[in-house]
Amino acid sequence: MLIWMMILMPVMAGLLSWVIRGFVARSILLVVTASVHAGLVGWVWTQPLTPEAHAWLGIDALSLLFLSVTSGLFLVVAVYSVGYLRREAVHRVERDFEEGVLFSNAPEARFVGCLLLFLASMTLVLVSRHLGLLWMAVEATTLASAPLIGFHRHHRSLEATWKYLLICSVGIALALLGNFFFAVAASHSEQTVHLTLSTLLSHAPALNTTWLKAGFLLCLVGYGTKMGLVPMHTWLPDAHSEAPSAVSALLSGALLNCAFMGILRSHSVMVAAHLGRFSGDLLVGFGLLSIGVAAALMIVQTDYKRMLAYSSVEHMGILALGVGLGGVAGYGAMLHTVNHSVTKALLFLCAGNILAAYQTKEIQGTSALIKRLPVTAVFWLIGILAITGSPPFGLFLSELTILKGAVQTGHWISAGLYLLGLGMVFVVMMRAVLAMVFGPAPSETIMQTEPPDSVWPLLALVAVVLGLGLMVPAGLDRVLHAAATCGGML
Picture 1 (cartoon, rainbow, N blue to C red):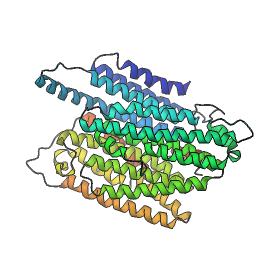
Picture 2 (picture 1 turned 180 degrees about the horizontal axis):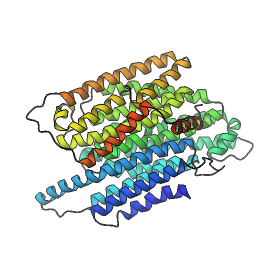
Picture 3 (picture 1 turned 45 degrees about the vertical axis):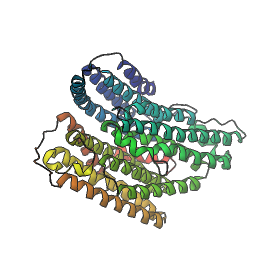
Picture 4 (picture 1 turned 180 degrees about the vertical axis):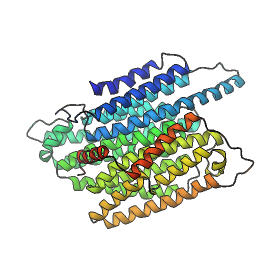
């Protein structure tokens, strides 16, 4: 019942947002739904995690970890979006008045409605324990988030939307084929094996290894497309840079984790079938490739939102590397998932404040940030230090844990390439951000007072990023270990 509430409540609220009228009513609906969803996820933390055998829906430690990240980020984004939509409405009224067009509040309905349906579809992904249902839910996240990417109706955002739909649809089709291959592998067993996780894991040693390998490879490429692994990442920089910053925060901080969940579920089946070395080596290869290519492409970026998008590609590579290495690195990957999601959400929301003040995404056009937006500038600098793995922030701890896992398992070449990629990213991002924050102003710069509704959400995220760098709470540590075990890493 609790799971159905977490799925159906945002669905009903999303549909209701199209019926009710008025900005205030929709804002209340959005924030209340996000708060109740977060409360339900918090309630799950007090319950025993014992998914029923053969159940299509259930919550294990891996689901709980990802649900907590998704629900928490959505609540922060919901609060931030209220102020964002208010400012967007004012600007649109002014434009429509100048052009003689009657104002319509339909864009707010579309934004809030799709945002809530996006939450419902991501929740379904994370609680699915049937590979077919998980696939359907991942496809639903694409359909729910596409209108959000093209919200501004600019030619660049519409192009990014279609690119997102086409590339991710091809990728998800490959993942569907991978599920078919898993089903064929199961048909070779003497007993009837369904595509529920419990059944697959219990009968994994009896499944056909050839079909399993082919199925995992297709799932890795398919879900890896949605996750943003190189070379299937080409949709990600456009979508993340052209979407509203609040949407970009969810795309990078929550949606990529949903695709990652598909890979983890497939990898756990491979480990149970004693094929973990095969799937792990593939993950390590894609992970290192993603880190290296993202670091190289970030060197030539002049758009700070695209720079953040390529940073997401890099960190998805780090997650794949950690899972592929397993052991201590697998635990580090789970911790890194939490740290990356929170930090990247912080950075994209900061980017939203910067874009609103400077009306440009060009790095060279946003100098003297510390003088114009002092609060956002401080949070922006903190976020960049955190995302590049600087102490004492959480990403330093998780990246160090993955490095420790690589060294302990004797993957010295992987460890060296990993460090090289992290070093390149640190130099590139710090060079760009220091110029933005402390660079000379092109003209007289007036310090602005940022609206409180655009600052308080950032402060909450900064507190989490710093707090996880100083200490991992005992309860979270237990869930991280259990999640790594569910994902076949421990």
